[in-house]
Image 1 (tube, rainbow, N blue to C red):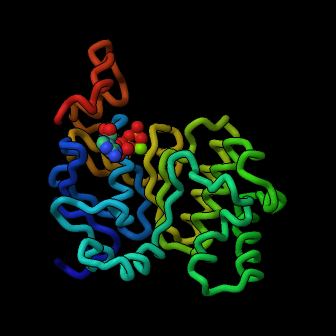
Image 2: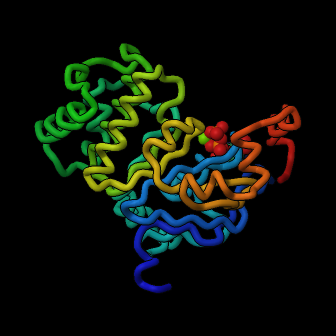
Length: 261
Ligand SMILES: Nc1ncnc2c1ncn2[C@@H]1O[C@H](COP(=O)(O)OP(=O)(O)OP(=O)(O)O)[C@@H](O)[C@H]1O
Ligand SMILES: [Mg+2]
């Protein structure tokens, strides 16, 4: 592989099946540092699965996933923990721990690492909560927060370990327009600070506001990669249907788990 193309995260001919169903087949993706990408595709196509594969939470059946040329598929648990420090994820729904305060949620990963003292971790938690405008919520529990606040706490938690790559899985779903605006602005500020973002979303205004490249997935394969202008011009039936569904689309993808695509 030429040296410049080793930079960043690569999925190379990845195949992944679960429950007898093929989710990804010979799937390729390149996350170039500094390029902010959105992954698009219908519900159930495998977008969250892609993020989990890159994080090493799932293992591919075949193919390779590399970070700066190093295969995460060949790594043991200890090496994987080190590699994962470079990547954080804001999970679909936030996935906060209900029994922990906001501050404990944000500092959780640092506490587990056992490197910083409790005072230092609290300082980091306050700083990251300040970044998302929620310093005053540090002692509250997730149940006391609105949906938008939970998503911002989840972002603060993802930032705690100062990752290079931040994955966002549907970060604006269910938020009011101001909540959506807050998330967009936070993502743009993170990009400005040099973080590389990868988002999965169905919220096209947000995708267009924060991403400069798009990857479209259909039937387990990458069918398009490029800019918004290229995506809008590409003669691809699945992309056209995604953006402008017609009566033919009705319930087409509703029983996906029954179909071995
Ligand atoms: N543990 C599991 N057992 C069986 N099938 C699973 C399991 N986890 C995921 N799947 C299937 O894998 C497919 C891909 O799931 P994934 O969550 O990656 O989709 P997605 O593109 O993120 O969808 P959405 O847009 O709705 O979040 C789905 O069709 C789902 O039914
Ligand atoms: Mg998903």
